Length: 113
Length: 110
Image (cartoon, rainbow over all chains, first blue to last red):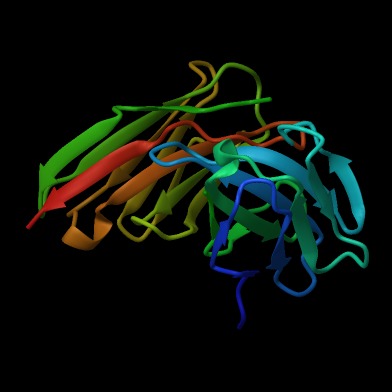
């Protein structure tokens, strides 16, 4: 069956541009997480959705970061006015529910120049 | 948030040897998960152990959990070159915010 997919896989943005990263979770998965992973580090939590409800956004680094999951399936992570420090791999994961294993997508590598 | 800390940071072994890596955490948990990440790729879930379990097996993987010591270990037996990856633990508690440590980077030399 289809796993978690993310698009684009690679994105180069000029500083100041807005970007939108898409996550297609596994069908029927209630939980959806976004993570940011810097080179050589573990993934850092950004935000969590349960269906369409964003229950935790405490990991979003600034108000330039915004995530949504309006119909409880596909999710978009938007970064406004990108900065160089936003360069990282952005990972999406979905799960049957909280407390179950998470299935990760391949990530989107964002490079801000 | 509940963060696991993996130890050692790096481990290099010969193919066929066993690899053991450890995870420590600070507060009570409901479960703990281990993940593998090959270079440049997404994380793959390996095993989930619940707080009322002490040991779990999956193929060549053996995970133990000691809630009194707030620690877990992952043992990979008869390692293969394909096991070369970074391994992360993720303690799960009541918070939605699930975090990872820096991982153990395992190198299996053919």
